[in-house]
Image (cartoon, rainbow over all chains, first blue to last red; front, side):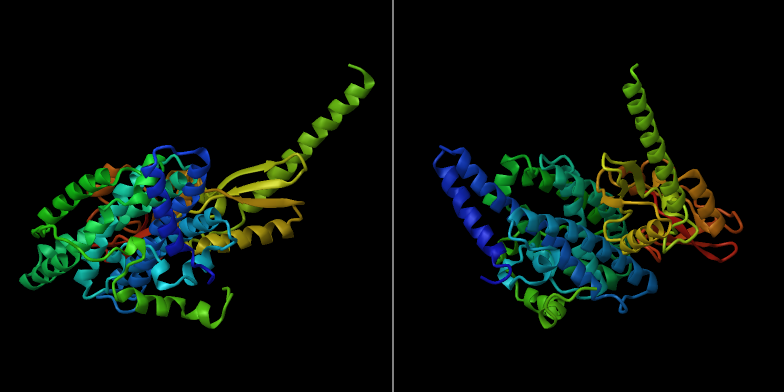
Length: 285
Length: 181
């Protein structure tokens, strides 16, 4: 097996095992302990990969932003996200128990082993589209991490308590820009409204609870996603109202990145992100 | 107290005294370690040193916490601390990386706040940030040079993760604000 076949395998096998255990209501202690690390591993990858992949996207703006302040803004957000990804992926490596450190997990997995939601890997587009993507994810991370700070998993709770402070700033920045662009000129309004319509269908995945999410909720590791959804929804509605933008209608969606089924955009992103580690295996700064 | 007990008690006292001396030395050494991005502040002023203790084996344990989770200065700070302790011959020591409780700008010392202001960076608002504080407009920010409150925020983020960028509309100078988290 490759250095990190883990993710997809873990997600799939955990899913299968959990489904099986749930079906036979007689959950033995052994089955529970066998399932938990795999589901926890997959869950941690989902959290860590969301931050990692989004950070990689934001990094593409460095040197290309509309203004120096925005260059600093997106770079700082990316930096926080990488810090969060490091904590989460290091922890994931420990839970996996195969001696993989943060770098191996971050850089040496295959396409289908990344478990970030598909929204994070969407191209930057214009600055408006980047901001729309950022608002949608910042608000999700804020509502999620506020609740994860009370997780039954102490290590995750500590990471969340640290993360949530940073995420508040991210949302303040991104929402501030969305309001300026939405309630700006006819051109800026039209652009962010169209980006919102393009990206909106991908938000459904964030809240579509599957067996991994449910296992985490049952163990009180993670909050129920319906709870996160309604809080997110209220927050997004308030921002959109201020930005004079219209909330798109919910639609069906095709992608399921958090189970390793990604859009075509992730491969290109990974090719760039993994280049150094693949060319110079084990390279360190 | 038997003579043996008296000897043991005095040895214990000596160990405690020696530990206290080494801990005090460590604090003095740490107070000379600069934050690489805001050299006006020491790591002690910044509040990232959470404890200095001596364990049963006589090893100094230094609790270090990051300001922001992705702050690149964290590793530089760690190296600077290691170097300073070695140079001071502080004896056996180790650094323990702490995540909880999460660092807050409230941990910047009073002296640190004075040093920040003198350096031209507005110190963070006091009291732990609440979500309400963060989603509502800031208090008017006074320019550290001319004290005018006729200022504007240019960016939520500045040259380092911990600062935001402002400009004074009266003296026209840009300045930084150490964010409250």
